Every structure is written in C-alpha cells, then in structure tokens.
Length: 164
Image (tube, rainbow, N blue to C red; front, side, top):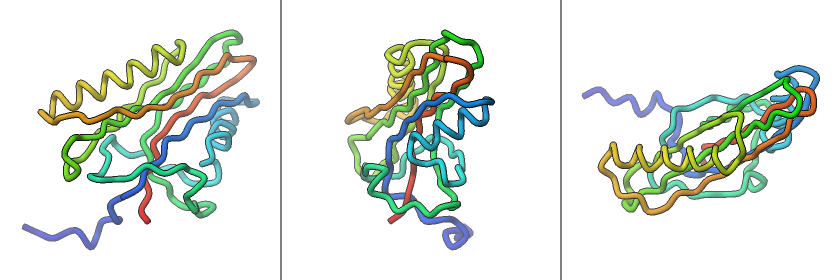
C-alpha cells in the first residue's frame, strides 16, 4: 500500500457550527453577507463532503484564529431567494458516534420552509447515514437559520472543520 499521508492536509480535530442570514443587492452579495453574519466571511470556503473526523471536539467559531483569506474546510447548506415574503432556511446536523475512534457524519439541508422542518430533515438524514453504516449514534448536534425574504436574501449553515 502506498503511504499518501504526507500529501494530505492534517485531519481536523475541531469543528464549529455556524449560521447566518442576510439580505443583499444580488444573491451572491446576500450569500457573502450571510457568511459575514456567520463569522466566516473573510475566508475562502472549501466545501467538503460530510464526514466528521474521529474524536473531533466542538469549539465556538469565535475561539478559532481563522486567517483572513485562508482556506476554510466546511460542509454547508445555503439557499437564496429573490421572492419577497418567502421563508428560506438552511440547517446542518452532526452525528457523533458512540465509538470515539469512528468518524461522525455531517448532513446539510436547505429549503423554502420553516427552520423546524429543515432542521428536522437534516437530523433525520444523520440517523439514516448512521443506519447505513451500522454505526451506533451517541448524539446529534444541529444548527440552522431561517429568513423571511425582503428583496434578495441568503440563509447559510455550516460545520467548519479545523486543525489545532
């Protein structure tokens, strides 16, 4: 077997749940403003698939020293709309396994719906993912946000993965 560990980035050992929503002149401006609202707006997002490294510990995003312009790995859900009065919501859910040496699962969901419905869907997707893996689920942590569109809005929820 070929050892490629020296070619890979370090495995994250910290994660943060973040969320934000905002209005903007365009969908991209609204998304950028939602990222600023979530505390990750001055970084370059690197969208990841949905696996939480084994034994990763949760920290508040404010406790992380994120370099301006740095690459930030995360799994996220985002939605935008230019239809006034529409409710949009994004949510992420993290499944923590019973076995600290096993990886967890992150699920993302966004929709034109109330936060409760969107967050429940993300949480159910975690349950389904653990069932598919025949892995025992210890707990689910989730975060989400909804937003009633005034003119042009975005809602964003994510799980930041970081190495300390």
